[in-house]
Every structure is written in C-alpha cells, then in structure tokens.
Image 1 (cartoon, rainbow, N blue to C red):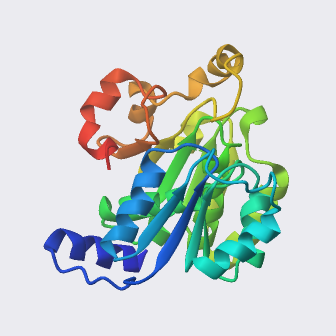
Image 2: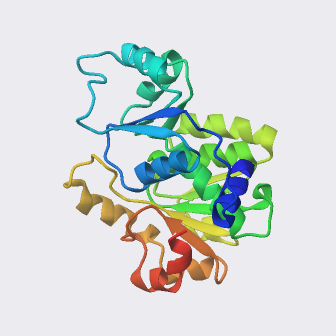
Image 3: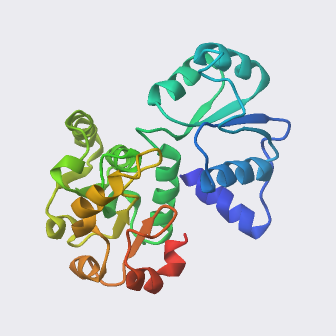
Length: 269
C-alpha cells in the first residue's frame, strides 16, 4: 500500500520511473472483466512491462492442458502471471508451479487485489492510519469480496464489521481463522445481522453485488427479497455518520439513486 501511494503520486505528477522495462506479464482471464483487466494493463504499461491477454476462449488451461503444465510453460516465458477465474485452487496451483509471481485477479472465493485498492482509497479519504479505520460491509458477505475484506482487515488490524443475514455471512471456518489473525494484529471483527449495530460510527460503508458472476438469473428474486434490508440507503447512512464515504464495485443497483447522486465523485474512486 505504501508503494501504491508513491506510484500513484508519481503518475499524477509525471515523475513515475519505469521499473519493469523488458518484463512480460501474462493476464489469464477465464472470467470476463472491464476494470480489473484495464487496471492490470495500464499499471503494467505505465511501468514499462508488456502484457499478453488470454481471455475466456484464448487458452487451453484446465482443458487440454493441466494447470500444472500450463504454469510451468508460462513461467518459462513470462516474468509474472495474473489469473482471474473460478476456483481458488487454480490460482494456488499456478503459484506453486510457475516459478514466477502469480497474482490473484479474482476467484470465486477471494479478490485480494480489489481489497488493496479499496484500502488505498480509505487511506486517501481518511486522516486516520489504516489500523484505526472502521468500515462495514453490507449485503452478501459470503462472496469473494466479503471474504477478502474480512481477511484483509484482520491482517491490517482494522475494525471490520459485516452486516448480513445469517445465511449470507462468511463461513465459520474463515471467520475463525481471521479471529486468530486478529489476536496478533489487534483487529476487531464483528459479524452480525443487526444493521444498526454494524454501521454505528464506522468511517466507511461498503456493499457489493447481490448475485455474483456466474450465478443463475433465477437467483435474483429470492436474493433481492433476502438482502433488500441491507441496501445502502438514506436510512442506513443516517445510522452511520453524516457525510462519510461508501463504495461499491461496478454498477450501483445496491445503492439507492439518492445516495448515489450525493456521493457520485467519491463512489467513482
């Protein structure tokens, strides 16, 4: 995160030094993407690296070729590999056999690069050190963002709260692991279905899609009925602290129009 601050400042001041000249990076996208792909490509180009984009139909990974063999071959050609796709085991196997750095651009279970970007945004919009920042995730906390925010907050010593129906809370095993991490980092972790308890006094609100990529359209009606109480709206914001920041990935369906318009500039961060 400290390096991210430096690179971002250098980019906007026109003083960024290219430290990846001559490097080649493979971008494997088994799931389509707009922001993640653009972010990786722009960052690589800014630092002087070349990228090869392998889209959902652009490789034989996991089909005619095993993950292990693909990792070994790409590791001989590239200096780093980014993977965005399905199972967490795939990116872990790439990391085990590639012999070069492998970055998780999103799996069904986790989305760590997004969390790093979100923590940087929190740092930029708060005068507190990261360890003193509190934030609340509202909605389906079982998804990759809910999981990654929990893990990231535990490691960074933050005050993390998740407000979600019991059926949409993080798996108990992951929560238990993060509570162990929190004992060492000083993090505070609260998982509850009580919205008022979760949002009271936090510095940031965070929400995400209610139906994740790859889930059936038939899930919409049931999921909306379950999660509509956890929508970010004026009532929820009033329970928090006036004029604080909240973010969401991509579209803004889980935020009411009124709240979106009020904070549009900060939402786009």
